[in-house]
Image (cartoon, rainbow, N blue to C red; front, side):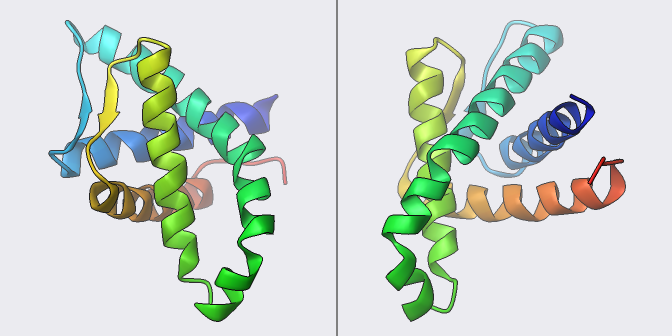
Length: 125
């Protein structure tokens, strides 16, 4: 349970940095508390998407990973971020990613920040 909480906090922090750095990734809300709550919910959705969908996509696109020496990971991360944005819209969460290239850059930012936070935050593994 602690590991799940740490990963959710890391995802929320990484998403917050992407929202802060990129104008086309938006998180709206009436108050700071509502924005934080929305960010945590979006982090949960993002974590579920990465846990359930990403491995399936990686299996089907494995030849592209080999062909591009792993650079295709950027595309997969962008697609997972766009899927999270779509699901957030369906769940009436005020989080939106506008455009594929914004998602590519956002995915890169989220990957770097998430990695850094996982290094700093305690983990059971």
